[in-house]
Length: 334
Image 1 (cartoon, helix red, strand yellow):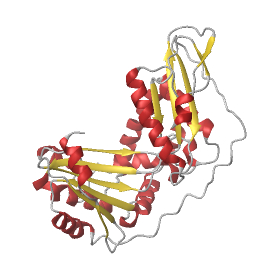
Image 2 (cartoon, rainbow, N blue to C red; image 1 turned 90 degrees about the horizontal axis):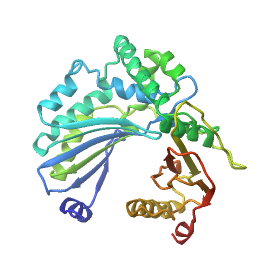
Image 3 (tube, one colour; image 1 turned 180 degrees about the horizontal axis):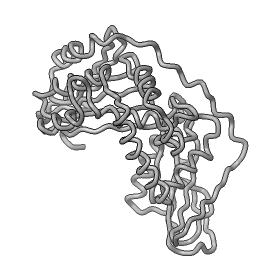
Image 4 (spheres, one colour; image 1 turned 30 degrees about the vertical axis):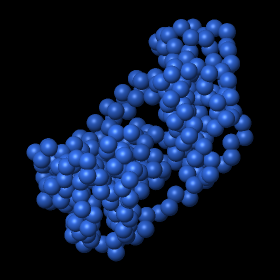
Protein backbone atom coordinates (compact mmCIF):
# COMPACT_ATOMS: atom_id res chain seq x y z
CA UNK A 1 0.00 0.00 0.00
CA UNK A 2 1.51 3.35 -1.04
CA UNK A 3 1.38 6.46 1.21
CA UNK A 4 -1.65 7.92 -0.58
CA UNK A 5 -3.62 4.68 -0.22
CA UNK A 6 -2.62 4.42 3.44
CA UNK A 7 -3.74 7.99 4.11
CA UNK A 8 -7.04 7.39 2.32
CA UNK A 9 -7.64 4.25 4.37
CA UNK A 10 -7.26 6.27 7.59
CA UNK A 11 -9.37 9.23 6.45
CA UNK A 12 -13.17 9.03 6.85
CA UNK A 13 -15.58 9.88 4.06
CA UNK A 14 -18.04 12.60 5.05
CA UNK A 15 -21.49 12.50 3.45
CA UNK A 16 -23.86 15.43 3.15
CA UNK A 17 -27.05 15.96 1.15
CA UNK A 18 -27.93 19.47 0.01
CA UNK A 19 -31.49 20.79 0.15
CA UNK A 20 -31.89 20.16 -3.61
CA UNK A 21 -31.01 16.48 -3.19
CA UNK A 22 -27.38 16.54 -4.36
CA UNK A 23 -25.34 14.02 -2.37
CA UNK A 24 -21.82 15.21 -1.50
CA UNK A 25 -18.96 12.91 -0.44
CA UNK A 26 -15.70 14.48 0.81
CA UNK A 27 -12.49 12.77 1.89
CA UNK A 28 -9.43 14.70 3.02
CA UNK A 29 -6.23 13.08 1.72
CA UNK A 30 -3.31 15.45 2.18
CA UNK A 31 -0.41 13.47 0.75
CA UNK A 32 -0.08 15.79 -2.28
CA UNK A 33 -1.44 19.28 -3.16
CA UNK A 34 -3.99 17.91 -5.63
CA UNK A 35 -7.70 17.20 -5.57
CA UNK A 36 -10.10 15.11 -7.61
CA UNK A 37 -13.62 16.40 -8.22
CA UNK A 38 -16.24 14.11 -9.73
CA UNK A 39 -19.93 14.29 -10.51
CA UNK A 40 -21.69 10.94 -10.89
CA UNK A 41 -25.15 10.88 -12.48
CA UNK A 42 -27.36 7.86 -11.85
CA UNK A 43 -28.07 7.39 -15.53
CA UNK A 44 -26.60 4.98 -18.04
CA UNK A 45 -27.66 2.67 -20.81
CA UNK A 46 -30.04 0.84 -18.43
CA UNK A 47 -32.20 4.00 -18.41
CA UNK A 48 -32.69 3.89 -22.17
CA UNK A 49 -35.33 2.17 -24.25
CA UNK A 50 -35.57 0.74 -27.73
CA UNK A 51 -35.26 3.53 -30.28
CA UNK A 52 -32.95 5.71 -28.16
CA UNK A 53 -30.21 3.25 -27.22
CA UNK A 54 -26.88 5.07 -26.92
CA UNK A 55 -28.47 8.38 -25.90
CA UNK A 56 -26.63 8.43 -22.53
CA UNK A 57 -23.29 8.17 -24.31
CA UNK A 58 -24.27 10.75 -26.93
CA UNK A 59 -25.29 13.17 -24.19
CA UNK A 60 -21.93 12.69 -22.48
CA UNK A 61 -20.26 13.83 -25.72
CA UNK A 62 -22.59 16.82 -25.97
CA UNK A 63 -21.73 17.98 -22.44
CA UNK A 64 -18.39 19.23 -23.78
CA UNK A 65 -20.04 21.49 -26.39
CA UNK A 66 -20.32 24.45 -24.06
CA UNK A 67 -22.68 26.57 -21.98
CA UNK A 68 -23.60 30.25 -22.16
CA UNK A 69 -20.53 30.85 -19.95
CA UNK A 70 -18.13 28.50 -21.73
CA UNK A 71 -18.26 28.46 -25.52
CA UNK A 72 -17.59 25.52 -27.81
CA UNK A 73 -14.30 23.85 -26.87
CA UNK A 74 -13.66 26.30 -24.05
CA UNK A 75 -14.32 23.79 -21.25
CA UNK A 76 -11.36 21.69 -22.39
CA UNK A 77 -9.15 24.72 -23.06
CA UNK A 78 -9.78 26.24 -19.62
CA UNK A 79 -9.07 22.97 -17.82
CA UNK A 80 -5.91 22.39 -19.87
CA UNK A 81 -4.73 25.93 -19.15
CA UNK A 82 -4.97 25.16 -15.43
CA UNK A 83 -3.10 21.87 -15.76
CA UNK A 84 -6.10 19.66 -15.08
CA UNK A 85 -6.55 16.05 -16.07
CA UNK A 86 -10.20 15.49 -17.02
CA UNK A 87 -12.52 13.13 -18.80
CA UNK A 88 -15.95 11.53 -18.69
CA UNK A 89 -17.41 8.07 -19.09
CA UNK A 90 -20.76 6.35 -19.61
CA UNK A 91 -21.53 2.88 -18.32
CA UNK A 92 -24.52 0.64 -17.83
CA UNK A 93 -25.59 2.35 -14.61
CA UNK A 94 -23.94 5.77 -14.46
CA UNK A 95 -22.32 8.69 -16.27
CA UNK A 96 -19.33 10.34 -14.60
CA UNK A 97 -17.38 13.56 -15.18
CA UNK A 98 -14.12 14.29 -13.35
CA UNK A 99 -11.24 16.72 -13.00
CA UNK A 100 -7.92 16.23 -11.20
CA UNK A 101 -6.06 19.48 -10.58
CA UNK A 102 -4.12 21.53 -8.05
CA UNK A 103 -6.11 21.78 -4.83
CA UNK A 104 -6.08 25.59 -4.87
CA UNK A 105 -8.08 25.45 -8.12
CA UNK A 106 -10.88 23.22 -6.91
CA UNK A 107 -13.43 25.98 -7.33
CA UNK A 108 -12.84 26.02 -11.11
CA UNK A 109 -13.92 22.37 -11.39
CA UNK A 110 -16.90 22.86 -9.06
CA UNK A 111 -18.10 25.94 -10.91
CA UNK A 112 -17.70 24.30 -14.31
CA UNK A 113 -19.61 21.13 -13.38
CA UNK A 114 -22.41 23.10 -11.73
CA UNK A 115 -22.70 25.23 -14.86
CA UNK A 116 -23.08 22.32 -17.22
CA UNK A 117 -25.43 20.45 -14.89
CA UNK A 118 -28.07 23.05 -15.63
CA UNK A 119 -26.89 25.16 -18.60
CA UNK A 120 -25.42 22.78 -21.18
CA UNK A 121 -25.93 23.86 -24.77
CA UNK A 122 -26.95 21.01 -27.06
CA UNK A 123 -26.89 22.54 -30.58
CA UNK A 124 -28.34 20.48 -33.39
CA UNK A 125 -25.35 21.06 -35.66
CA UNK A 126 -22.98 19.80 -32.95
CA UNK A 127 -25.20 16.78 -32.38
CA UNK A 128 -24.96 15.86 -36.06
CA UNK A 129 -21.16 16.15 -35.96
CA UNK A 130 -20.87 14.16 -32.75
CA UNK A 131 -23.16 11.45 -34.10
CA UNK A 132 -20.62 10.75 -36.84
CA UNK A 133 -17.89 10.45 -34.19
CA UNK A 134 -19.95 7.87 -32.28
CA UNK A 135 -20.79 6.07 -35.52
CA UNK A 136 -17.05 5.73 -36.17
CA UNK A 137 -16.68 4.16 -32.72
CA UNK A 138 -19.42 1.70 -33.63
CA UNK A 139 -17.66 0.81 -36.87
CA UNK A 140 -14.42 0.17 -34.98
CA UNK A 141 -16.32 -2.14 -32.65
CA UNK A 142 -17.67 -4.06 -35.63
CA UNK A 143 -14.10 -4.63 -36.83
CA UNK A 144 -12.89 -5.76 -33.39
CA UNK A 145 -13.63 -9.48 -32.88
CA UNK A 146 -13.07 -9.32 -29.12
CA UNK A 147 -15.47 -6.40 -28.74
CA UNK A 148 -18.04 -8.09 -30.98
CA UNK A 149 -17.91 -11.18 -28.77
CA UNK A 150 -18.42 -9.16 -25.60
CA UNK A 151 -21.38 -7.22 -26.99
CA UNK A 152 -23.05 -10.42 -28.18
CA UNK A 153 -22.40 -11.98 -24.76
CA UNK A 154 -24.41 -9.20 -23.10
CA UNK A 155 -27.15 -9.45 -25.71
CA UNK A 156 -27.46 -13.19 -25.13
CA UNK A 157 -27.28 -12.92 -21.34
CA UNK A 158 -30.00 -10.30 -20.94
CA UNK A 159 -33.10 -10.71 -23.06
CA UNK A 160 -35.51 -8.28 -21.37
CA UNK A 161 -33.39 -5.93 -19.25
CA UNK A 162 -31.72 -2.85 -20.85
CA UNK A 163 -28.32 -4.45 -20.19
CA UNK A 164 -29.20 -6.25 -23.43
CA UNK A 165 -27.85 -3.44 -25.61
CA UNK A 166 -24.34 -1.93 -25.57
CA UNK A 167 -23.66 1.37 -23.83
CA UNK A 168 -22.75 2.91 -27.16
CA UNK A 169 -26.18 1.87 -28.50
CA UNK A 170 -27.41 0.20 -31.66
CA UNK A 171 -26.22 1.92 -34.81
CA UNK A 172 -29.69 2.55 -36.24
CA UNK A 173 -30.78 4.24 -33.00
CA UNK A 174 -27.64 6.38 -32.77
CA UNK A 175 -28.20 7.61 -36.32
CA UNK A 176 -31.88 8.46 -35.72
CA UNK A 177 -31.92 10.01 -32.22
CA UNK A 178 -33.07 13.62 -32.47
CA UNK A 179 -31.48 16.63 -30.79
CA UNK A 180 -34.71 17.33 -28.92
CA UNK A 181 -34.68 13.79 -27.51
CA UNK A 182 -31.17 14.42 -26.16
CA UNK A 183 -32.29 17.72 -24.61
CA UNK A 184 -35.27 16.05 -22.95
CA UNK A 185 -33.06 13.24 -21.65
CA UNK A 186 -30.63 15.85 -20.25
CA UNK A 187 -33.39 17.77 -18.45
CA UNK A 188 -34.79 14.51 -17.04
CA UNK A 189 -31.61 12.97 -15.64
CA UNK A 190 -29.11 15.78 -15.09
CA UNK A 191 -30.70 17.13 -11.93
CA UNK A 192 -29.03 17.48 -8.51
CA UNK A 193 -31.28 14.89 -6.87
CA UNK A 194 -29.99 12.33 -9.39
CA UNK A 195 -26.30 13.09 -8.84
CA UNK A 196 -23.45 12.63 -6.38
CA UNK A 197 -20.51 15.05 -6.12
CA UNK A 198 -17.26 13.53 -4.83
CA UNK A 199 -14.19 15.45 -3.60
CA UNK A 200 -11.00 13.62 -2.62
CA UNK A 201 -7.67 15.26 -1.93
CA UNK A 202 -5.86 18.11 -0.22
CA UNK A 203 -8.90 20.05 0.95
CA UNK A 204 -10.55 21.31 4.08
CA UNK A 205 -13.89 19.55 4.35
CA UNK A 206 -15.88 22.59 5.50
CA UNK A 207 -14.42 24.84 2.81
CA UNK A 208 -14.95 22.25 0.08
CA UNK A 209 -18.57 21.73 1.13
CA UNK A 210 -19.09 25.50 1.09
CA UNK A 211 -17.84 25.62 -2.51
CA UNK A 212 -20.29 22.91 -3.55
CA UNK A 213 -23.14 24.66 -1.74
CA UNK A 214 -22.26 27.97 -3.38
CA UNK A 215 -22.26 26.65 -6.95
CA UNK A 216 -24.72 23.75 -6.84
CA UNK A 217 -27.07 24.89 -4.07
CA UNK A 218 -29.01 27.25 -6.34
CA UNK A 219 -29.83 24.57 -8.93
CA UNK A 220 -33.46 23.58 -8.34
CA UNK A 221 -34.38 20.03 -7.49
CA UNK A 222 -35.90 18.24 -10.50
CA UNK A 223 -38.64 15.65 -10.78
CA UNK A 224 -37.44 12.18 -9.83
CA UNK A 225 -36.27 10.39 -13.01
CA UNK A 226 -38.38 7.37 -13.96
CA UNK A 227 -37.09 4.17 -12.35
CA UNK A 228 -36.00 1.11 -14.31
CA UNK A 229 -38.83 -1.38 -13.75
CA UNK A 230 -37.79 -4.19 -16.08
CA UNK A 231 -36.84 -7.41 -14.29
CA UNK A 232 -34.84 -10.00 -16.21
CA UNK A 233 -36.69 -13.33 -16.17
CA UNK A 234 -34.87 -16.41 -14.83
CA UNK A 235 -32.56 -18.14 -17.27
CA UNK A 236 -33.69 -21.72 -17.81
CA UNK A 237 -30.66 -23.15 -19.54
CA UNK A 238 -27.21 -22.59 -20.98
CA UNK A 239 -27.00 -20.22 -23.94
CA UNK A 240 -24.35 -20.49 -26.64
CA UNK A 241 -23.55 -18.48 -29.73
CA UNK A 242 -20.94 -18.32 -32.49
CA UNK A 243 -19.74 -15.39 -34.54
CA UNK A 244 -17.95 -16.19 -37.80
CA UNK A 245 -15.76 -13.57 -39.46
CA UNK A 246 -12.66 -13.65 -41.70
CA UNK A 247 -9.37 -14.15 -39.86
CA UNK A 248 -7.32 -16.80 -38.06
CA UNK A 249 -7.82 -15.67 -34.45
CA UNK A 250 -10.24 -17.63 -32.30
CA UNK A 251 -11.86 -16.21 -29.18
CA UNK A 252 -13.68 -17.89 -26.35
CA UNK A 253 -15.75 -15.94 -23.85
CA UNK A 254 -17.79 -17.39 -20.99
CA UNK A 255 -20.13 -15.31 -18.82
CA UNK A 256 -22.11 -15.77 -15.63
CA UNK A 257 -24.91 -13.48 -14.55
CA UNK A 258 -24.22 -11.79 -11.20
CA UNK A 259 -26.85 -11.29 -8.49
CA UNK A 260 -28.10 -7.79 -7.78
CA UNK A 261 -25.66 -5.39 -6.10
CA UNK A 262 -27.23 -5.70 -2.63
CA UNK A 263 -27.04 -9.51 -2.63
CA UNK A 264 -24.79 -11.01 0.07
CA UNK A 265 -22.94 -13.12 -2.52
CA UNK A 266 -21.37 -10.00 -4.02
CA UNK A 267 -18.78 -9.97 -1.23
CA UNK A 268 -17.60 -13.42 -2.32
CA UNK A 269 -17.49 -12.25 -5.94
CA UNK A 270 -15.27 -9.32 -4.93
CA UNK A 271 -12.87 -11.76 -3.26
CA UNK A 272 -12.99 -14.01 -6.32
CA UNK A 273 -12.08 -11.07 -8.54
CA UNK A 274 -9.00 -10.32 -6.43
CA UNK A 275 -7.98 -13.98 -6.57
CA UNK A 276 -8.44 -13.99 -10.34
CA UNK A 277 -6.18 -10.96 -10.70
CA UNK A 278 -3.49 -12.60 -8.56
CA UNK A 279 -3.77 -15.86 -10.47
CA UNK A 280 -3.42 -14.02 -13.78
CA UNK A 281 -0.17 -12.49 -12.51
CA UNK A 282 1.03 -15.98 -11.56
CA UNK A 283 -0.07 -17.29 -14.99
CA UNK A 284 -2.03 -19.93 -13.11
CA UNK A 285 -3.97 -22.09 -15.61
CA UNK A 286 -5.94 -24.02 -12.97
CA UNK A 287 -8.33 -21.24 -12.26
CA UNK A 288 -11.98 -20.55 -11.77
CA UNK A 289 -13.67 -21.86 -14.89
CA UNK A 290 -14.92 -25.42 -15.03
CA UNK A 291 -15.43 -25.93 -18.75
CA UNK A 292 -13.81 -27.80 -21.61
CA UNK A 293 -11.27 -25.49 -23.24
CA UNK A 294 -9.43 -26.24 -26.51
CA UNK A 295 -5.68 -26.78 -26.18
CA UNK A 296 -3.61 -23.64 -26.89
CA UNK A 297 -6.38 -21.43 -25.53
CA UNK A 298 -5.29 -20.10 -22.18
CA UNK A 299 -8.10 -19.23 -19.73
CA UNK A 300 -7.81 -16.28 -17.40
CA UNK A 301 -6.25 -13.94 -19.94
CA UNK A 302 -8.94 -11.41 -19.14
CA UNK A 303 -11.17 -12.09 -16.14
CA UNK A 304 -13.64 -9.39 -15.16
CA UNK A 305 -16.51 -8.94 -12.74
CA UNK A 306 -19.07 -6.28 -13.63
CA UNK A 307 -22.11 -5.38 -11.60
CA UNK A 308 -24.26 -7.26 -14.11
CA UNK A 309 -22.11 -10.30 -14.84
CA UNK A 310 -18.72 -11.95 -14.56
CA UNK A 311 -16.87 -13.22 -17.60
CA UNK A 312 -13.58 -14.78 -18.60
CA UNK A 313 -12.15 -14.78 -22.07
CA UNK A 314 -9.22 -16.22 -23.96
CA UNK A 315 -7.83 -16.26 -27.48
CA UNK A 316 -5.72 -18.46 -29.73
CA UNK A 317 -4.28 -18.42 -33.24
CA UNK A 318 -4.27 -22.21 -33.41
CA UNK A 319 -6.94 -24.63 -34.55
CA UNK A 320 -8.89 -26.22 -31.68
CA UNK A 321 -7.64 -29.64 -30.65
CA UNK A 322 -8.70 -32.15 -28.00
CA UNK A 323 -10.45 -30.37 -25.10
CA UNK A 324 -9.09 -30.45 -21.57
CA UNK A 325 -10.82 -29.63 -18.30
CA UNK A 326 -9.94 -26.61 -16.22
CA UNK A 327 -10.78 -27.12 -12.56
CA UNK A 328 -12.83 -24.83 -10.36
CA UNK A 329 -11.53 -25.88 -6.98
CA UNK A 330 -10.29 -22.37 -6.13
CA UNK A 331 -13.69 -20.83 -6.71
CA UNK A 332 -15.28 -23.40 -4.42
CA UNK A 333 -12.86 -22.40 -1.67
CA UNK A 334 -13.70 -18.66 -1.79
